[in-house]
Amino acid sequence: MRKINIVIMGKTGSGKSTLVNTLMGKPVAKVGAGGRQTFENTLYTTRHNGSQLNLYDTVGLESNDALNKQTLHKIKKRIEESNWKLAENDINAVWYCINANGAKFEDVESTFINSLVYTYEIPFVIVLTRAHSHKYANALKDQILKGYPVCKVISVLAEEFVAGTDIHIPPYGMNELLHLTIDKYDLIKRMALGHKNDVLNERIAKLEKERAADIARKRKKAKKKIKTAATTAFTLGCIPGISFLSLQGPTIGGYSGINSVFGIRMNEDTVTEIVATCIFSIITLPIFAIPVVSGSLAKSMVEDCCNKYLDAVTEVYRQSSAGELTDARLTAERVKLQLSELLKKKEG
Ligand SMILES: Nc1nc2c(ncn2[C@@H]2O[C@H](COP(=O)(O)OP(=O)(O)OP(=O)(O)O)[C@@H](O)[C@H]2O)c(=O)[nH]1
Ligand SMILES: [Mg+2]
Image 1 (cartoon, rainbow, N blue to C red):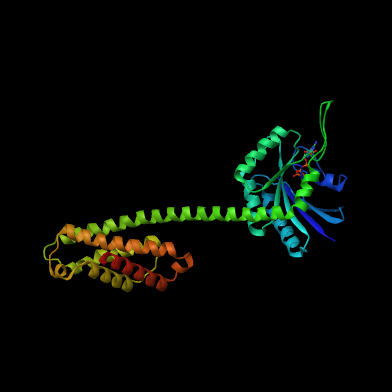
Image 2: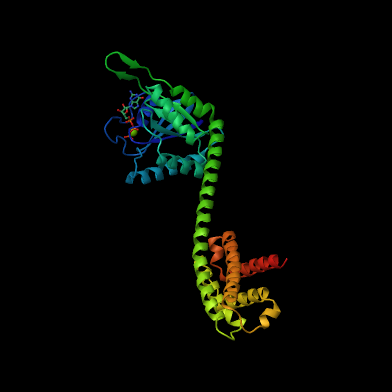
């Protein structure tokens, strides 16, 4: 028999168990106002148009609640199991319930949905429950669709709403909700995939932003190291008779400082070797033969070498994964290659 598996989730008091009771046609689940009513995720099974309708009524989610973790863990297990057993025409979906009466769709709620959709690609419908007021329900629907343009939001009143002696609002929306979930399953499935892509793109954009900020921070710190090396070079350059070779010391200091800022492990010999390559490529032979350098020339040379090295390290850091960066040999090779390309560019 075709199975229709629906996980009903949402915050406490949103009316999840009332939806269940309406679909079951009898009061199987405890409902009530004033605090949590459902304390265990519970599966209810009934028939719907010849199919088996499995309703998974869940514990209400609350901000920073210790039970959330447990509830979500069980929900994930339930979705996994249902996905695993899913036959061709079966349905596996989530109804995320939100009390329509002035309630807000909170960030933490979109995080709950996103984590499910991202991991399981599970189709979902946002159900605005207790929607006796169309005005409130529509306002909330607009708010949700702003953040979630590609999703279905449906208002329902599972049980008649009675106010005073004359106001009786009859239930509505349940058939539409079932129709959307069952007959338009392919549509909500496509929407879930689209949503997953949006979530993925958002995550990538966030990651890139964080990475750019991290690189900018590291470069700023590295510039300070370069400044220290340049100051030492200036002092050395002012000593009469000092040779260009003596500038290797502060340059090595600058390179090592840059490495430490970027978390690059490199042994001293490698640093010395790279420094030599860099210095020789920058100093033309006739200048190199001159024994005395001025302070400012020494400073600008070391700065130049260090800045080139910083650009090379930045590029390698940008392109490497965290795991690759722990491989000292691989990183050293990449830095050398990057630096030689930068130096060639300058020559060209
Ligand atoms: N009139 C009317 N009242 C509703 C409707 N849905 C929920 N309520 C009322 O809202 C209150 C909370 O409903 P529940 O179904 O217990 O909510 P829940 O989401 O299961 O709550 P927890 O189990 O605590 O997470 C109850 O007093 C319900 O009678 C509805 O469609 N119509
Ligand atoms: Mg309940």
